[in-house]
Amino acid sequence: MSLLAIGINHNTATVELREKVAFGPEKLPQALEQLNQNPTVNGSVIISTCNRTEIYCDVKNGGKSKIVEWLSQFHQVTPEELKPSLYVHEEQAAIRHLMRVACGLDSLVLGEPQILGQVKQAYADSRQCKSVDSATEKLFQKAFSVAKRVRTETDIGGNAVSVAYAACTLAKHIFESLEDSTVLLVGAGETIELVAKHLAGNGCTKMIVANRTKERALPLAEQFGAHIIGLPEIPDQLAKADIVISSTASPLPIIGKGMVETALKARRFQPMLLVDIAVPRDIESQVGDLNDAYLYTVDDLQSIVDSNIEQRKIEAIQAEAIVSEESAAFMSWMRSLQAVDSIREYRQSANEVREELLNKSLQALTAGADAEQVLLELSNKLTNKLIHAPTRALQSAAEKGEPAKLAIIRQSLGLENA
Image 1 (cartoon, rainbow, N blue to C red):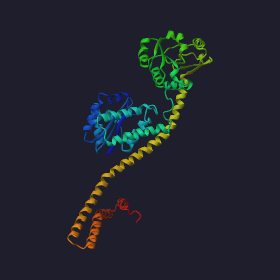
Image 2 (image 1 turned 120 degrees about the vertical axis):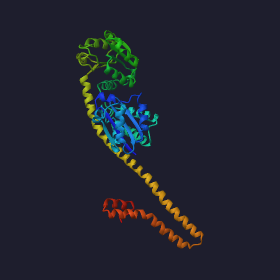
Image 3 (image 1 turned 90 degrees about the vertical axis):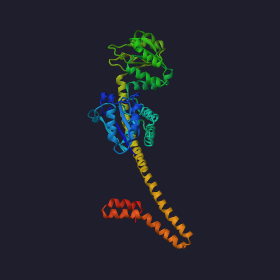
Image 4 (image 1 turned 30 degrees about the vertical axis):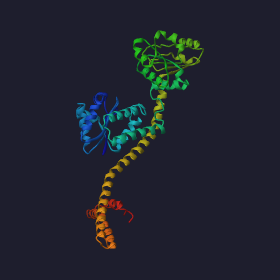
């Protein structure tokens, strides 16, 4: 039994290469079936995301080169193109790598939690295809428990490290509950979509999407049950919004001081949070001068993000220590398994010798032999039989001048202090 991790990720390979070696849902069952049929593979799990493709295997001797060759052939990528970006980890290094991946320590965004769900899904897919053996089963279950320990004992995932997430976190700090808050999202691009996902994940159900073209905003609105308005309707709808988050490509501000002032009067001066994550800015800077209007720009959020990234790096030190400890412990447990068969064989051999001599002694007693003489002969023969192989091993190590081997044999015989 030997654990192996082979793969590429965002640190080693270009997007083009990652796309070529990705295992989509339509390819995954076929790939796992082929790995199952490989005589050098006992069990396997494939993790394939936009940032990484990795194969975790329990392999026999010589399996490493076979897996690399298979990966190249399966995706019809030449070894010359693949190998410079490929990393290979064996035994404890493979264990440690999987644990780091599951904990978000190897992610593009340090500590991001989504990767753990992706690793769990990859494991579930492999189980469904019956490609998981006892070694990979134990490995992945251990990786999941280590990821849970890291999340419990460190705060590596507790700080916002994207502008979209920071905007949502800021809203949560200012408003007690997002469930009762109405959010006006200005724009319908990727950043606003990420903001909407974070808001929805925190219980926000009242969203208004304002966009230059309503058709462009329709998929976003349908996804989150939001109401759509055009940009000219913002002045009439602004008073309904507790939170305004804006990210458009407009060259000029969309929301001005006078518009917000009018909205605040209509709200009877209930506070309003405005987050401008557009460059150029969508909201006039003078809005920040108004009482009850709390304006944050992309620079404000970026300073929060930068601070949180540094905090995650500090937390990552503790997380790395946990991974090192857990991977070493798991490797020790795996090594102990290698002795199980040897112990079983040794016990069986000793029992066979005991039963053989015992039967002969019983037969002698039945035939009327002196009991004391029979017991003496039994003890002498049993001792000689059991010490024969260790004695030969001690003599051989001494004759060949192998002191290290001699010391190990002495220790195994309980002679280290003799």
